[in-house]
Image (tube, rainbow, N blue to C red; front, side, top):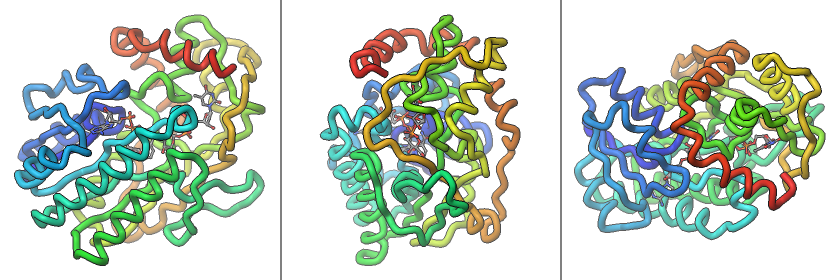
Length: 331
Ligand code: NAD
Ligand code: DAU
């Protein structure tokens, strides 16, 4: 099977590429990545002799057409992914998440290639903190940020291309991932690397916002399950019942580092900050038989802390610039 992975030098895409090489030796893997600030060739170093890497944008229709024509399946991770950046400058989010997805869809339409679109639970907006409800595939779209609005738009493009043009596509909407190779701008790696540096973790607002954490390996095993067994045109929600508020996550990290439970700072909140995400993954579990393996959040977090301790050369070059950018907004 010839697999084209977009965004394979980013956090989830790199882990997906590693998992594919490890578990599917017959796969011929090509990674298409623009190597933006979020992409890092070092993330692919463990597999660089086993893949073909193409540096380029998913908005480049000639390049995309050529690569899609040579593929059996396209797994589409490439995106501008960080909410805070989308509040600062939404334009690359529109270009990559909307125009880039459109460009890929046109290519898979021309060449009849199977397409899997990796999306987010943020397309559904947020839930109240005291609401027992979770997101389901029937929850109406209600995105809050420029990031989530462009991801919602990209999902709707995929649905339209399935219905109108018969494109063979599936969509997955996953909750918050953690694990190795995550950019230090994101919540968990930012706090881990702060603690390694002896800096207090930074909590937006009161820290009561809830995210539904899943290990990146579990997200990626679910994506392969959907590619292998999912129904064309279907949307699958991916989650592992990992709801925690941000304060709980910071307190767990402080405990792992042997620091005092109150050794953190409250900083300026994110504008429009979604309160709570929660995934009901019943369809994925019951219809496709998928199950997560990383069900103990504390040990998954401990392993992630160990990874960042052992891979300082991977994250250190980006840390100062990320912190300078946050400092400018009081975060
Ligand atoms: P990331 O920011 O770490 O990586 C994105 C990758 O896409 C980078 O390698 C970057 O260079 C590449 N890229 C950006 N623009 C590109 C372009 N125009 N052409 C080609 N490549 C380009 O993102 P991530 O956290 O790994 O997220 C991957 C996907 O998963 C995204 O679609 C995101 O919406 C989705 N997702 C993420 C999470 C999460 O918790 N991080 C959860 C659910 C869904
Ligand atoms: O839900 C899936 C989404 O999860 C993905 O679609 C996005 O690509 C991914 O970035 C993530 O979005 P969030 O905005 O939830 O993730 P982030 O890591 O930016 O923040 C997680 C929570 O932590 C959020 O409530 C904001 C808060 N936060 C974040 C940072 C960076 C802090 O309290 N302090 C921080 O320093």
